[in-house]
Structures are given as structure tokens and as C-alpha cells.
Figure (cartoon, protein in one colour):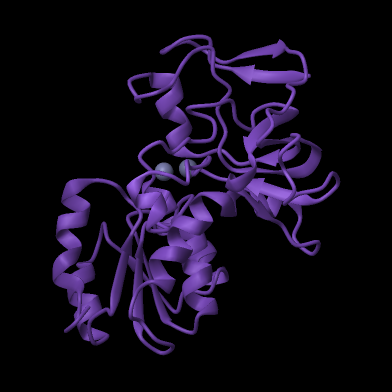
Length: 253
Ligand SMILES: [Zn+2]
Ligand SMILES: [Zn+2]
């Protein structure tokens, strides 16, 4: 199979031929149909992230079909459509796992970091890390939902915002363009905030009710005019950008 590997920290990608991997007893082999590209793939390229051995195949937005299952896997069958995201499996026995907090597993695996991910024609993934993909969802559309999508979707659905509330999304990039769609679909009055005015047409197409060009106007003043935000979902991981949004929140925001 073909695979795009990072041979060592700081090195360029190499396209190599590899044997198709055999799944361990608790793993599923996924025939990859699409893999999203995430900023966090850069961790593999840069090096320094704990637990990454090289060469490594990145990719943690993996959509495909079950190609083969390990001897102990009964939850999945060949042919089923599945996806794998950042969370690449858990141990079921540590303290967080026994509380059902699998994402906090002390022995958690990370797809494309602690084992080879989706920048290849096949990937073997722990069975418990897979999610089913419905037939109506194209693999290319499904793949980014496995990381960028679930990150923003979970942020909104675990907030206290209700339909009609003002929700601001900071940044209209890989995460933000999905957050705007979720916010719109959830019925929030959706504000897209970006320093790039060229993104306004896209943000509005995706469902933003308002667009604030943060390079030209003060988003805090605009949000306060609109009544204050119930949620500010910031997708730009810069401390000054995050610090600046606190004042944009309304009461109980
Ligand atoms: Zn990611
Ligand atoms: Zn665990």
C-alpha cells in the first residue's frame, strides 16, 4: 500500500510502499477513503509530542470502510463505514476509564501520533476508537468531522446556549467554518468573527447572521450591542485572542 510517512522529526513527508498492516486481535483494519488534514498533524512533523515513534504516518480524521477485523472484535464487520478521530483508543481499566471518562484515559492512544493514521491506504485502529459513518455522508465530508467537527460540535452541545441565543465563533478556518454551521443549525443567532474580511461571504453562506471584521472594528462593542454572547467559541489558539474574548460574554456566558 502507499503511505505518506514522516521519517523523523523535522523531515519532509515521504511517499513509500508498505505492506498492508494486519490487525491485532482487538483492532480493525480500515480501508481509508478520505483523511482530513489537521493543524495537529504538524505535531508529528515538528516532533516533541510525547509518545510518537518514527517513521510515523499522521492523519486523525480518517473515513473509510472496515476491511478486516481482529480475532477478538465483534462490534464491527467488514464493509461497514467507519471513522477514526484524535482519540485512538483507551484501556478500559484505569481510573478515568472506570468512571466512563474514556477521553481522559491514562493510557489513551492517539490516531496518527501513537500509531499510524490515515495518510495511507490502510490503517489499523483499536476497535473501541471507531465511529460509524451513516450512508448519506460522503467520506470526504465525514473525515473533517472526526476532529475539527467533533471539537466544535461538542463545545456547543455541552454549553448552556439554547436556540435563539447569541453565539460567537472566533476564526473562520478549519474549525470555525464547521462551528458556524453547527451554531446556525442549532438555531443560535450566529456571529462569525475574523480578521480576514474576505471570509465574510463564506461565513454568511455557512449560516452566520452577523460578521465582524476584528481587524477594523471592536468585536466586544459589536457583541455588546447585540446583547452579549451566551457562548464565545474561539478557534484561534493564541492567548491574546482568547483573553480578548472574555469581555464579549453576556451575563452567565
Ligand atoms: Zn485534529
Ligand atoms: Zn484507561
